[in-house]
Length: 314
Image 1 (tube, rainbow, N blue to C red):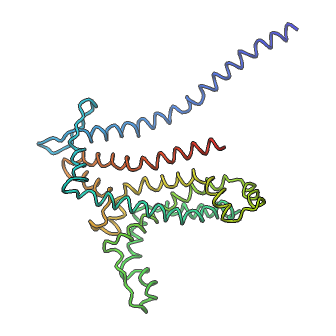
Image 2 (image 1 turned 90 degrees about the horizontal axis):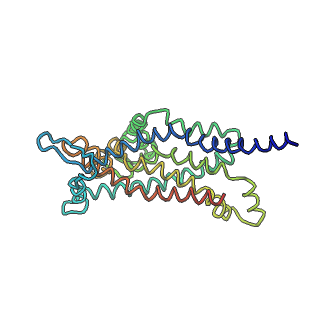
Image 3 (image 1 turned 90 degrees about the vertical axis):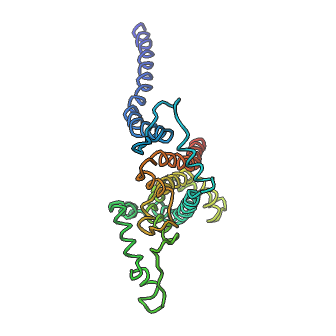
């Protein structure tokens, strides 16, 4: 009996020690990731803020960051505000154009990606790895090379016009590369479509098939199963895909440079790129970056809320 009491009394401190170790294990394991985020995300973002709210050297026309937030100045922000909503609001059309391009491209990416991801998750079977490999395969080639391939395809004597004109039988010749908005949107869709497919596949693959069978057993038709079971359970994947696609699209400038090159299709990324390469306008480029972050705050909040609501449901 005394030995039993002794072992029982020893088990409680051991259990408490294990709980303390478990509480400390995950924070310690998270320290490298937190340090990485602080070094490569928080610090650069603070530098962008200091440049956006900084000054310009009047002699050398270089941006002078102000590191003390108490001394931040609003000149660069006011310049951007004037170019957006002032008398000479020549920044406003590219901003509206960018938002329009991104919305159209994201919606089309979602329409294309959903059936592909659903097939890969539910019907590919043993070919699932092959389908995913084919989806990821374009990433093995640089983005510039893929856009150059599109330039060759879309030239007036390229393959696309040959297919449309049935090899020259029909008198159809589209000048795709002459500053067309739909060409830029096509390039955005092609360039970022895999970013939409992969998170959708991850979300759809986690749906238990028994839930779909139960819905059918209860009399739900195919559309009702899709609307009431598949779509609600895939919302985290949809939100992640929209975020992953919209983020790089908002700052993209290379696609429109390669497929258009016209000021009529310039986007926010082109404004930022031009401001960075112009002496004394780095602060305006930083202010434009903050504008992009404000525009993307909505999808980020929606993604966070969708993830939280999915965790609550589970």
